[in-house]
Amino acid sequence: MSDSNGRPEINPAVGAMLQSARDWLLHEHSLFRTLDLKPVLIGHSKATFSVYLPEDFCNADGKIHGSLLTLIMDSIFGLAAFTALDELKPIATINLRTDYLADIAPGGRVACAAECRRLRGDVAHVAGDLTDENTGALIATGSGAFMIGTRGPNRESRL
Amino acid sequence: MSGRADIAMIEEYAARSPISKWLGFSAQENGADVLFHLAVDERHIGNALIRALHGGAIAAFLEFSAEAMLHARLHGERRLSSINADIDYLTSARAQNMTARVRLVRVGRRIAFVEAVGWQKDEASPVAAGRFRFRIGEEK
Image (cartoon, rainbow over all chains, first blue to last red; front, top):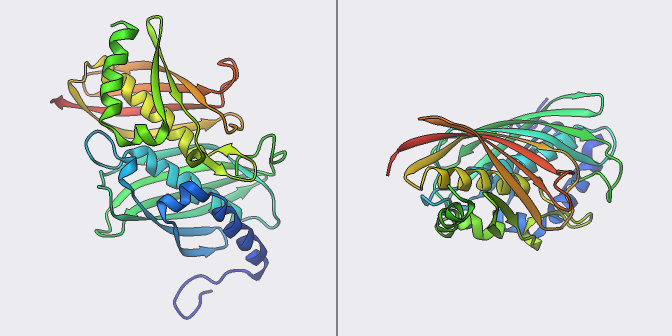
């Protein structure tokens, strides 16, 4: 099912979670302001954001250091896992794998598209990729597992 | 190569890498080995409510530490590029400084396999571990 723009409709039950997700993003304050995150699509089990690549994250060759791409994926993948939940629960990354497919210069933007492929018990499996918004080139792919319902804000949860 | 010689190469590499400044990155001689440090700052916080380090900041710190150690052991003479990275988040990381130790598992002619483990209070209780593969390019 999709809206008039061809985008997936957001399940009304997810609405409250999306509000929490927006709050979550706001609380990323310093880091996410630097990356100028802009939502492109948020739906059930899916999240796509446009992200700025600042020079602060360059390597010695003047290209964006690969670990920024991991950082972006950790953030957006976590949000995709969050939108797949039927009720609000804290989540935390268990592990993350990133393949670096191409160099990218600072100053541009990438689109990070993430999908929660499966919620299996209290583990969410998320996969996604990063593309150069200017050229459309695939820059990185990733996959990760997220723990749902961690013990609490001051003990086990990071998100 | 001694820890002292490694430090000189690592500091030179970090000085040329803007991400090291964002990380608050430094390296310290530890006998024949090297310890790496992340000086925590507000920009590393993932969620202001629970005051925890962002998982991505942890990943970036471990990967840059692994890369800098490899750079030093190759005497700064080879160009490095990351192939892929695997990060395990072992427990919650608080808004505190972090330390890492790097192990060069295998440095071949073209590919290197590197591990990094990071902790906050106690090395025996690590908060994250990373495995990284690098392509070793031609001599500069």
